[in-house]
Image (cartoon, rainbow, N blue to C red; front, side):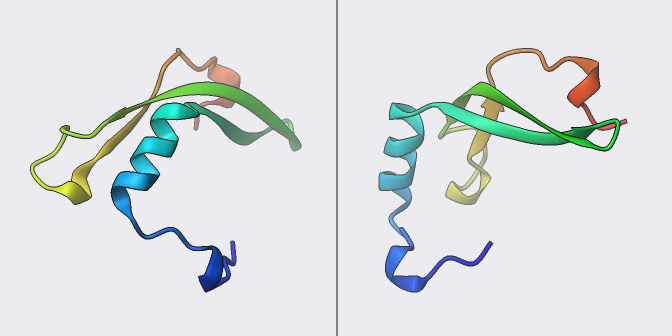
Length: 70
C-alpha cells in the first residue's frame, strides 16, 4: 500500500502507543474465494526480542480454522 511521506509515522514509540491504545486490528483473508474480514484484538510485546526490531504483535484470541493459512 502506498503511503505518502507526509503521512508516514517513523517514531517507533508513537506507533507502539497507538497500537496499545487502539489494540484491535483487521485480519483479511479469503473463504471459498470470497473476502472475509475479522476484527481481532492484538497485543504488543515491546520486549519480545533482543532488539527493537524484534517487537512482537500477537493476536489476542484463537482464530478459527477457516481464516488460518492452510
